[in-house]
Length: 144
Image: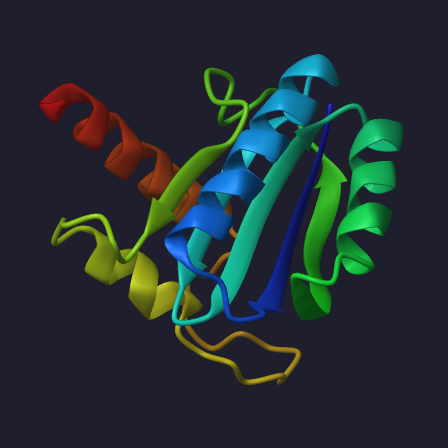
């Protein structure tokens, strides 16, 4: 099993366009056994993808040339023992979701600093960050 995390700056997108991205992603990911989470905040995407290495890397190549975002930057990649988002073909979090816990997520993704060292720990490259995202998703799911 393999995972990859990237950040990109989104072109100006409205809610309908984001929903189209999500629907297309979920369909593709389901068909290709990819799971993960997409976070949209302040014009930025942070995405965690997991699945077979070849499939994830091929998808990432497509993402890098997608005209809906630019400055795609790989944050981390590597082998993992098991999936974090095994029940989500593409979980989604954004500041449109009313929840105080998203403040934590915003803190972690708010920096557009291109410094190679991310100063806030946990950051989008750490397991602790994605576990916090997963816990937020689970709490939102339980409320619904």
